[in-house]
Length: 173
Image (cartoon, rainbow, N blue to C red; front, side):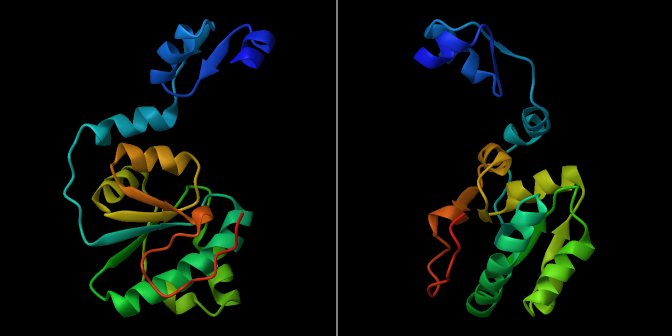
């Protein structure tokens, strides 16, 4: 807080609840909006029934996909073997192409696993699907906020926690 007061004339925050918190500490603060917050308002007020579904979320950048997609696909393979009734879904960022996913999957001989996962590209369907998932395996970031708004339990990959399955090697980012 001391450094913010020293170096910031006006603080612009990501979430509306932050305005009061920073203002109470003597900072000039504004919230001008957040597209994720706005999109999630529709889903945070609606209680969704959780389904026997797990979201696999490899990130939105090429480097994240190259690193995390193989980990998630290997995890998906284990989940499918031990829990065959669990539906696996992969909500995707608009910036990602199916070709990129398939290229990375093929590089690791996991293209058959990817084909068994339902890919979700539409933004409104993405949030509805996330709200129905019991759990999500993800890279922390914007998705953490999205999952919190849908009350879906997030298991961040960087914590090396990936369900009570046999040990799965995870590369720490």
